[in-house]
Amino acid sequence: MERSERHSGETKYGFLRLLKLAADGIFAFSIVPIRAAALLGAAAIFLSSLFGLYALFAKIVLRKSPQGFTALLLLITFLSGVLLFFLGVIGEYVGRIYEESKGRPLYIVSRIVGSRSGTPGNLEGGSLRQEAGDRLRAERS
Image (cartoon, rainbow, N blue to C red; front, side, top):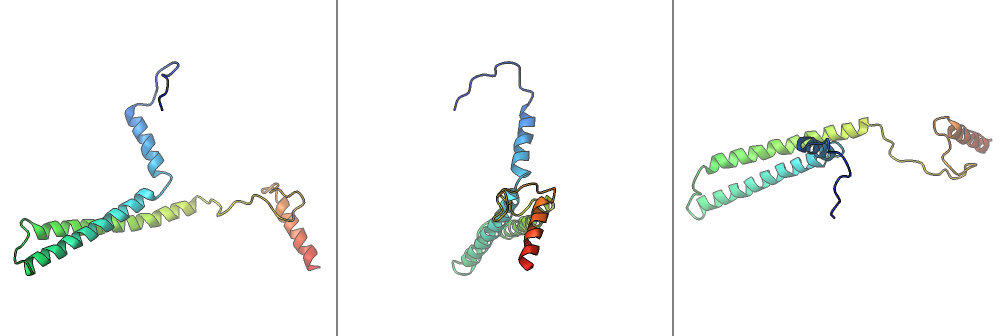
């Protein structure tokens, strides 16, 4: 979609400020990047384990060893994957604590069945709470 030029003036947002805005949009409202880190760590662990099994197979069965720093490469990749995975696990805990600390309700009441008006009414004034209490007392007597 092509847009026309700005009517007047110049934008006040430079490239770095736009980049910061994009990063805030990605990281501030979800824990998806944290989950992506955990998945990337799990993938690194899996791939380094596969390469380790291949190196053992090549050494024992094929009687030739992969050339280079195989042990060092495996160790660094595997431990980096473990660190990244557990960083994602810890981040998941922090993300859940953050979501809980926002204090958002699990659900929003849009309609009350059996109320006089059928609308939520004044939730802060306590009229619904009083109406529900009156209804409960009437049912008990």
